[in-house]
Length: 73
Image 1 (cartoon, helix red, strand yellow):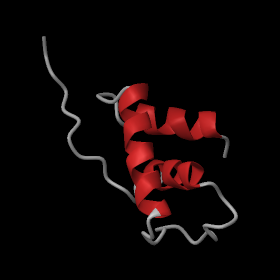
Image 2 (spheres, helix red, strand yellow):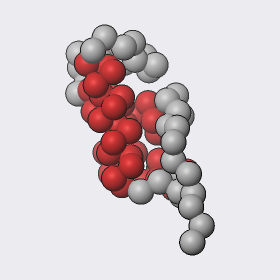
Image 3 (tube, rainbow, N blue to C red):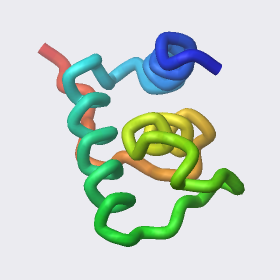
């Protein structure tokens, strides 16, 4: 699946999240993967960039993103 499709899937499933929050979540998970965290997908981490792998994990719901709350104005 393309990056744009994964991003759209995540944002559709999480209406209280915007592109910038997703970028932060992907960056944090990418750092974890680069620092030795084990991927939750059955994909060789050496064959995929860490950011793409993080995006795939988030899109599949294998990684939860905490701290995003919907604020009513």
